[in-house]
Image 1 (cartoon, each protein chain N blue to C red):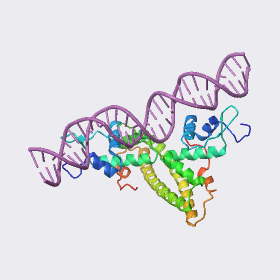
Image 2: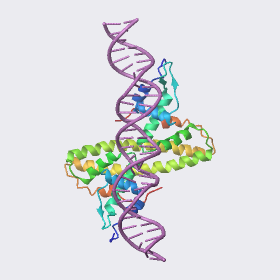
Image 3: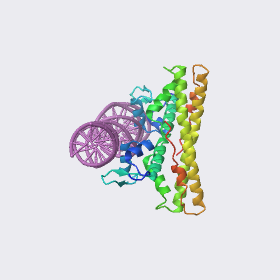
Image 4: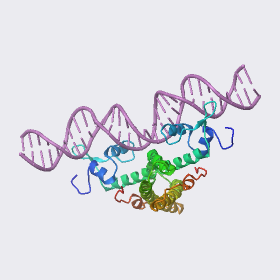
Length: 140
Length: 140
DNA sequence: GTACGGCCTGTAGGGACTACAGGGTCAAGC
DNA sequence: GCTTGACCCTGTAGTCCCTACAGGCCGTAC
């Protein structure tokens, strides 16, 4: 860890918000690349690892599986894909992403209405619930 | 299942897109309420169950844990909460939801740029990646 | 009255972590 | 130089959230 832009797994964990065991697990299943090692056998990371890990963390929080994230990373890494495949994958992910945005907007609306109602010191009697539970066909 | 708005677990599964075993699991852990039973011991559901299950399914797809969803449902069910608690919970969830929307928008941008690049038959050389991996502090 | 699809209650397995156990490394302070 | 404590290592076992049987009951159609 001589340079300022190289760091240990503990620092990577701290900066990424992903805990140490999880980072090692990601390495084992191929979501994170195998890092360099120090003389003592410690893993050595740099900013690229940090960026990748940030992405994975956020992706997980947004409901993508590790498998999907592996696919996205592979796509983004730019190897072993034809242009047509990239296009198709990107389009498929786009549909999924837009659906998630729609759903979250709806939830945001419900929550903010609920919060507003409660500030005004009214007990929420929640016919709001209907909006939250609103039914619609499942988009595959 | 005499009335048209009462149905079996198989139908509920079909209409909600949540599979049968998962529904029974949700019942076991208290995310879904204990349903009525037919004379033969079959679970009997109605539209309220369907609505609730839709919500849970979408919530899961958006990265909420079952525990968070239980909390949201509890909140929405309107019992055992003071107005202040509802407000605080709603506000906290709102922040989370808005962060997710922001992240998804960013991802949407990257993906659509990638797709557009590929339609024009250019090999994606992806400095786009920088946008995707962009770093920022973890919001707690 | 039997065949077959749907339901029942288990229990066991997989994906994505999380938490030890048991041991080595290293920098600080004495 | 030696100890102490925080950090790292490689396992393995446990948790959460499902998913997939196994073995058996119910119910309708022929």
